[in-house]
Image (cartoon, rainbow, N blue to C red; front, side, top):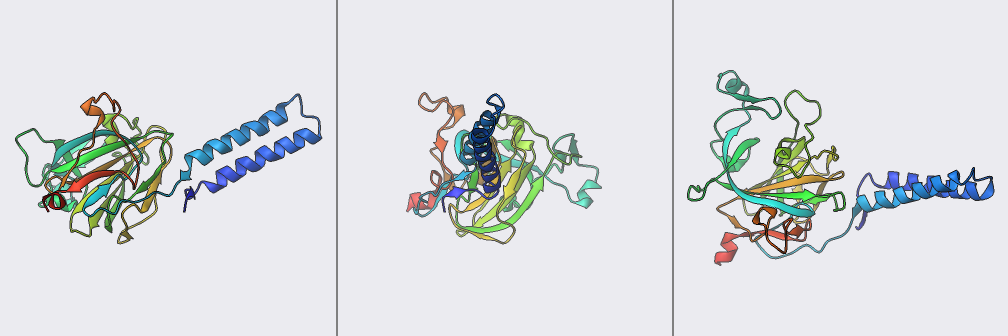
Length: 286
């Protein structure tokens, strides 16, 4: 149902009650040079802002077979073809002496998974040069969510959540927290989830915190089934969501900020659960 996302009712009701109480008190007793009514108006204005931020509208979900919808509201920063070049190491690999360490992103083993598209653990990806494409490449689409966008995230397709994990920077209890619109923000504190779709493909959704948005709240967990467009979590304030899909299985016509399109200088604005961002190549061929 449309309304407020989980966690939003308490701040909205609290601020509303404080505002109404201050206005009533200010109208009955001496308003203290107008400070009490002014405080009440401030509380009500804050309640309106909180209600707008926590809004969670219903969305018409596309029923076209083979499509994936956007996981987040916002402008599309980029769409890149990438290839895995490393992975999070096991204990044995850590002891091998081959691991590469980064002060913020942590330790990496310099080889991808045997099956990179299994997405069994977090991998390190790099862009693929034109003419060097491979069947194990992925498309990565990044959506920047401004403070004015709806911050509830939705499932791109129907399937099951195989794994979900929380990641921070190396040696940090929280963070790092770079501005979400920058390239470096992909290593911010984040929640990574892998969905195995009903068609057998795996996709990876990464909910990334920003400089202000530092709380990622998942609604679902391992082994939960999801419908296309189902609410899967929320990121509070401005933030970013990345979606990776198998490059050999999907195509996209999304215009991004990197395309420098005159009509979409910030990239196309997409809506979670509603905007189609990828189409199955198999469906296109049929």
